[in-house]
Structures are given as structure tokens and as C-alpha cells.
Image 1 (cartoon, rainbow, N blue to C red):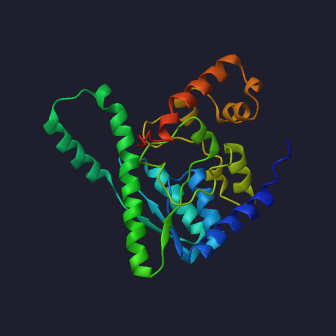
Image 2: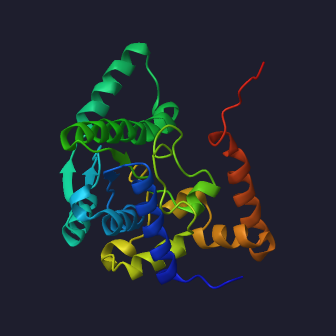
Length: 252
């Protein structure tokens, strides 16, 4: 396998973004900034391609940790793009109040729905803001996706939430490759090497998945490069989440 050249790949991604924007007469990018490495690397790439004046970051707290907002500010300050805060906590709480009218549900029954509601509220907000700033700036803003290849392979995203975006700069990069791109772009180490978590379930990603991102990347390259237990877990995650990629449609 050809060795990953992070510097060359960074140039390729930046050119990909520039070309797409030029061909489609686009103007700017809206990015949900979580305080993690994926959104930081995407913000760095979009800023390098479009200029900081054409990038808007959005923090979208929803019963979130304050540290995430601090790290998001660190990224926006470093790359010089505008950062706005849109707090979804009260909206989430109002949703839950309305839900209570449907019946009394226990915590276990609500757990998965609650976790997935947050990224869906965030998606709606990002698209609303993209349309708003497009109208204000008289140029089209796209919502930039922040999912990486490892997450996508095992379906570690919310259908109708963080799976929805207009451009995907890092979707073909493994977690390790994202970090290498981040090193080229000088993403602050505090964020780049922070252990990834979803900000929803209070668990580290790899704890929740039950397998490491390194193992997922190795499995994608060669299935027998990981242990039997790891391979079985990864295969099951991949197969169980294939429905997230395609909507079965009857054709007459």
C-alpha cells in the first residue's frame, strides 16, 4: 500500500474544495464546531481553501460540557473564523415536555431517541443558519460535514443528523489520517489529540463502539489484520448500519 502523504493530501483536499466552490458559484461554509479534532480539521481545511472570512463556525450546546465550547473557541481564534453560539438546551427540553404528553416512558426506552435528537436538532440549526447567512451575505453557504471514514464504515453517526451535509472533506480519511492532516495544518494539540467522544452519551467513542478506530482502519485495509473478536464486532457494526446509507425505494 502506498504510504499516506499528509502534505500532498492536504493540498489535494484544499484544491477539491476550491474547485467545487468555483464550479458551483458558492461562497462560504457553515461548520458545527464540537471542540474535537474532526470539526477542527474540517474548519482548518475550509479556512485554507475559502479564507477565514467565508467560514462560520457554530457551537451547538445541548446539555453539553463547557470544555467543548472552550476548545471550539480555541480553534476559531487560531484560524480566525467567526464563531457563533446557538444553545439548543431549552429547545431540547421543550421537545421533551411535549413528548411527556404522549405517555410516561422510562429512561432506557428514551435513551437512544434522546441521544439522536441532539444531532438532528443541530443539523436543522446548521441548515437554517446556512440559509440565513446566504441571504445576508448574498452568497451561498454550504454545511460542511465532519465525519471520518472509520465512523462512516461502522455507521457511527445519526441518520438525519450529522449524516446530512453538503460537502465532506474528510469522509475518505481514517482517524489516523485526519490527525496527520491536522498536524500539517497545525491544529492545536489540545484538540487534535483529545480522545474522541460524541458529547451525547458521556462515553469515549471507542468505549461505546467496543473497538478502536485503529482496528477499524486495519480491518478496512485487510480483514484478517485484526483479532477474530475485533473483526466480528466491526463486521456486525458495519452490516447492522448499512440501512443508514440507502433508503429502499420501490420502483414501478
